Picture 1 (cartoon, rainbow, N blue to C red):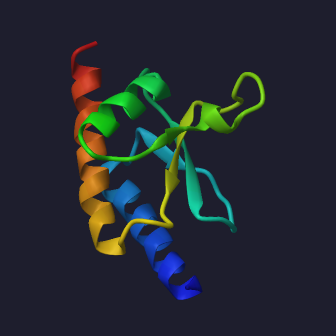
Picture 2 (picture 1 turned 60 degrees about the vertical axis):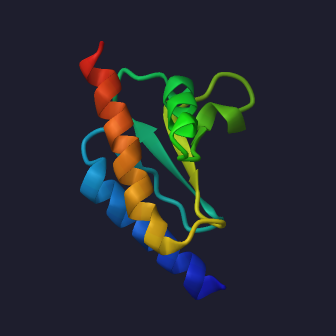
Length: 105
């Protein structure tokens, strides 16, 4: 399972670099089945999470995991339940949703 999760994590990092460069910055970590990333747009994480779910992309706001006010404006990506080959398309869709929101502001 370590190999499978490592592949998924690497696929997620590659997808972020390919589709979300500039507006999403991974936060370094070495453990777990989630990857946290800083959101570098004016978009509120909760709004992006809601829109992404409407389009079948599951992501969480980092604030959901904070006790009190979150220190980082960002998103949490779980990769324990998604096949590696689906990650790139999910990130592409999330990037489209984020770009659409930025253009309508």
